[in-house]
Length: 225
Image 1 (tube, rainbow, N blue to C red):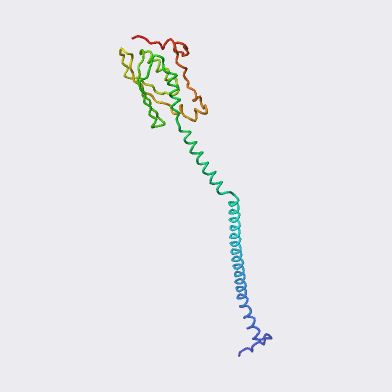
Image 2: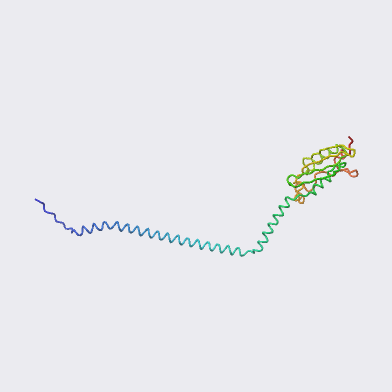
């Protein structure tokens, strides 16, 4: 025999409505999250747009300031000063590499031994770092040639002096001479500024019978073979 159904005071419609409200809470939460994300995305997009506008305005202002600053200078004066600077740099370059051969000839005049005469001279400055010098001459004796080699070595201008083809003839001892010239010793810039003593020859003037100023006075007289 079936037991009778227990009566309840909760209507069936109320139970159904409660179940529907429980399912709708999750949908409302998802909708709220979606709306929040949309708002945040819109705020970020607006911030990026405003920041880009700020950068563009700032760049435009800085460019305008730069143009005004450039316009405040005299373009023709700037052009003149630029050309002057270029010319000064070019002049400085030429001056630093310019040679003064007169310095070498002054040394040669002062340091040539009394009884030696040079009959030819060749000066090649094609290579500024290796100026070559070749000469030929006549000496009173072989001793005078040895003395001349010593004087040239002490000049500070001639380097690697070499006497060759020494030949004693009735008119004197003929010889050939070759050497290198130190470019720094005849540099024009050093000559006019007196740097490193290059403006003055380092050898003493050759002796003469009236004024025996050379330290090689007794050795420079012609000697017989």
